[in-house]
Image 1: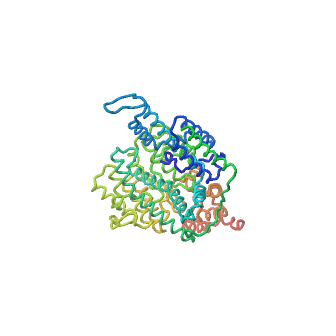
Image 2 (image 1 turned 135 degrees about the horizontal axis):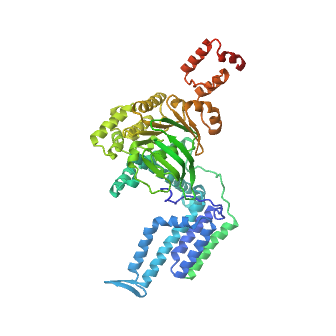
Image 3 (image 1 turned 180 degrees about the vertical axis):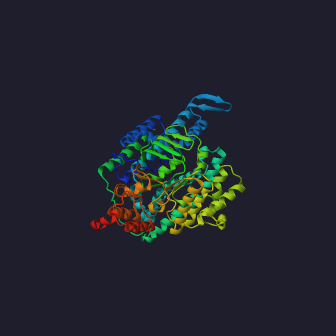
Length: 264
Length: 299
């Protein structure tokens, strides 16, 4: 199960992307999102793809992991592609079926939209592939720090985030343990017919939810017993350091946006 | 032959960047009707080993033969449902293997899956609960509201209810009070003796299983570090403690000390206070015994 779910798992290869300031990476990803939204032509798409590939190779993580990261969303991509094909009526008619026709414009904008989605999902995986959850949180706190003036509490948000992220593997593990216990007693999910499979998965909900609540309660108790108070001023174990490389990294995204705008 | 491992290796997340080797080239033969105990430091692969016994995990290298089943690495998986009826596995943490909303449903889960009628399953459930020393009043309770010790007993009972031929338990006595622990060890030995079941137990408290286990297996970093009877285990205790981080109980250390000083090393070890006292008394009554002379030198 964990093999298929790549979200939130770090792959350490020690590349220079791994060593960047998490704030730079977060800002970069936000700018990338803006750039991808702006992509509207084949030329811009090609540029964005080239840009993405360059950074993906720079992480020294095998490209198949990026493909894997985008895989769970394939249905959404097919859907986006289909919607564009069904609705856009620009260009020449390729195929006619009753009152509906497939246009070249629909095909190309469908392809561009689906590729944008694929690029976005696989590229943003760089963030979680190259950054530990702790650093990611610190980065998020750093990015959100300016909003403190308007009453936002970044610390609370990041605490929530880090606990939520921390619990994903734990809950998956617990689910797997129950699945194993059921398999050991003659109900192996892999060997059951479809309808039974559904019933078994529903029967997992109660114990897994109960387990999650129990864990959450234990966590609260153990944090409180060690004197944790929300919002107390804290120092950090690792301090983030912004270097020139981080500046260049962010600037490269600004350049990407500019280029995409020009190629529109 | 109940269980044969031929150069079995296992790695979690095999063929990915997170590959983690847990077992390496294990060769192991367990005869039918044996009572085996598995020991070793945390993370030495004990739990992984157990999960290979009933095909919950499939080997990533080598071949596992259990009863009439043959599980080979890289082969298309066979349906293993009926193997699991014959090999009952109790996992390590009891609170993580109960999933129904009453104790009775949880106990009946196995028997029902293996084609028993509801009435038969109920009889099995209450018998299994009785075996682990709990009474029928618990049947209607929610398993998540039980105490840790009760949960563990229910988890064990849920596997006993399937009446498997091979019983595999992962640290069944952890979190139990001393009395329940002794009772459980006795129950296992009774199942082994009277019903001829094959029993395999992981334990950190060696002294608990010493009176019952005929075969000892010690794991170290995913490999077998020792395999043999209790007498050999006692003889090699010092090495195993040093190399494998085995917690050698006081009774073994005591025997080795006494045996070393009195020249009894070749004998069957006496591991309870009573047998040791008896042996010493016999030694003192032997007028020309070898032991007496040694006492002065050793002391």
